[in-house]
Amino acid sequence: MTHEAHRPRTERDAGPGPRPLWRQRDFGVFWTAQTLSVLGDSFALIALPLLVLEATGSIARMGLLTAVGGAAAVLAAVFAGAVVDRVDRRRLLIGCDLVRMVLYGVIPVVWLLGPQIWLLYAVLPLCEAVGMLFAVGYVTVVRGLVGTEQLTEANGRLNATAAAAGILGPLCAGLVAAWSGPATAVGVDAASFGVSAACMVFVRFRPRAADDTPGGRPGLWQDLRAGVSFLYGHPVLRTLTVLLCGFSFLTLGLNDLVIYHLKHDLGHDDGTVGTVMAVGALGTITGALFVARVRRRLGFGRTWTGSVAVCGLAFAGLGWARDVPVVAALSAAFLACAGMAGTCSMSLRQEVTPEPLLGRVTSAYWTLQYSAAPIGAAVLTWAAERHGTTPVALVAGAACVLIAVVALFTPVRRSGHT
Image 1 (cartoon, rainbow, N blue to C red):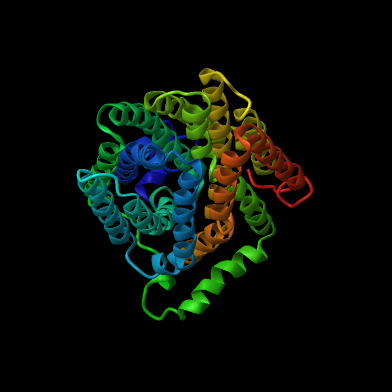
Image 2 (cartoon, rainbow, N blue to C red; image 1 turned 60 degrees about the vertical axis):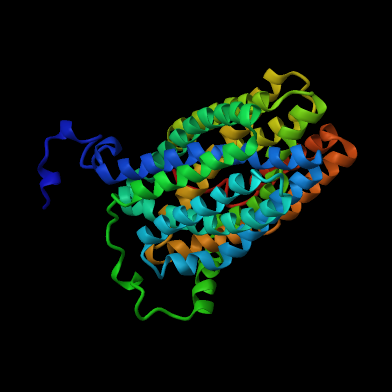
């Protein structure tokens, strides 16, 4: 038996469990790195749409940029799991951060010569593809850092502090954009990836299972099929994949819709956009902090279904809102529930998937989930420009509620996972 097993009960969480997360050094460094990265990345979340809107005045062009980036992420997701399961994950994460640092860093330098919209359509797809590799790798290493018992708690804390950074980020991004332009805000994002890479150097990951080593692996096609086969064979994951495909189709363009609504419909400036996004991040924090407790109390099915339903109601109300505080409150409600649903589904996937398959299953899951999302973002923003944000938000929100209703008649509702 290990020394940990002989420690007094008072030194452990609640019985013979693992050490509290705050006492685990490697998770702490990893946690810090991701928080810093999100702090900077939240700048780009606002700055890139503002760059397009500033140069073109078109929400459809904003939606097209979102769609192009989303399509690149979906394409990368097809191969991301096979790559992640074949290479050293720590080196992969560091490399992804460094590549994004360079790519995003090009934008403010070129912008010194004047707006170059074509550059955004070149850089963002590359960054989204690399970001998908990072995201799949990120999911696979969390269990290796904390173990299965603390997955939901760890994911909740990662999401909560990321959202906390997301409060400061949009506020600062709005101020920086109003003061010196959105391109400068993108430069801050680039620097954040460099800091994240430096922190990742000091994280030690547990060795992977022996059958997950690069040598002796099957071909790429077999790797790709393995993830899809596991999803298809698991009733809850199979159903979630289908339902989330529809949810992602409806909601990927939400950020563009909110920005356009605030600036075009309500006539507010970049600083207001940043403030609303920051308030929305408060919702993400709330959802992330309470998701583990709610899931233990209600179970997976009711937590996920209820969260998606509230997302739909909040989305439907966004187009009708004419006061900035109401827009901010609805954004916070949407992000809180979207975060709870996302954390639940990610934790469930991490819990039930064998470690050697985790990268490929995650990759297949995200590929299928987001396969229609880029088209959805383009359609949503095109419709908003043509018909206005109010009817578009109402229809999209009602469709999200319908997804939650459909889930009540599937294995998701009956899931026994807590």
